[in-house]
Amino acid sequence: MSTCQPVNVSKMRDYTTIILEGGLGNRMRVAAAALATARRTGLPFRVLWLNQWGMPCRFDRLFQAVNGGHEQFEMRDAAGWERAVYARARAANLWLPRAAQHVLHRRIITSPQVYYLQQDGFDFDAWFRHGGGLLMAYRDFASYTGEDLRSLFRPQPAVQELVDCYCEHFTSHTIGCHIRRTDNQQSIKESPLELFIAAIDREIEQHADTRIFLATDDEATKTQLLRRYGADSIITSPSAATRESSNGILLALAEMLALARTSRIYGSAGSTFSQIAAQLGDKPLFYQKLSTCG
Image (cartoon, rainbow, N blue to C red; front, side, top):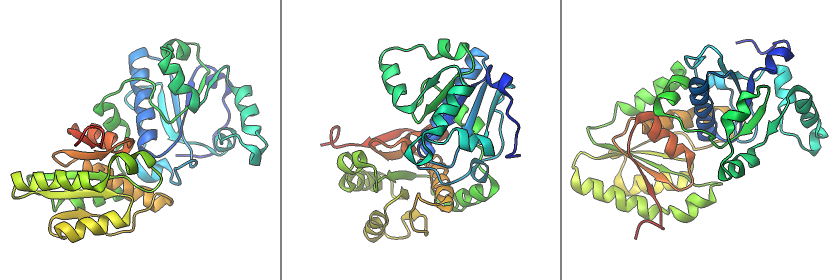
């Protein structure tokens, strides 16, 4: 898809523009919320993917082009001028994107505002009906379904090949464990490894053919579980876990899609990644949390 597109201001005055922010799971849930809203209301949406703030990878490297089954809905990588206009406004760019955004859009909602507006019962649909708005979000603003996710996010063949390689080793009872660490303090604090080990041990006791698909951003966690259960029981990526490169995001997506094909998912508190995997596969999700486990 071309990255050099002319500015169509008249069209922008009709469309609501959504800028996806945050990591992979956050972006996916915001896009799905936009599609669900477009289908429900018939309103036009443009959803743009920028390589910034936790996402060093282009959309078209991960996913096939889509229109979501709605003729007035588009989702794609941002074009060259869009990358400049919708960059995060900060001192380094002299806050210029903010000024450009106000020129192009009648009204703007930023990421931090979405949560508080939801708490106050804000009518997003009414806001969208005015047209020409700009919403930047990492939090979903409307309900959506697993089918919304699946219709938008069809993996590129290279990603699907990785998923298929993982799933070749699945038994009739392969469970998924997503153990988030690194920068997610809530997951580290509320979802310690001991809770996952207890859950795995219960599964093995009940099902002799249990295998564990492990998705994690922490190599120490991977090593510890491999030592405890062995390589015959643990299915996981042989590559070092990272979310700071384009290839790392591609590998993370493959893990998410493989999680979606397990029989059930044990997830980390505060992780959208666990949630999206469960929704993609319509699989039960059990958050491992100290507050609910004892």
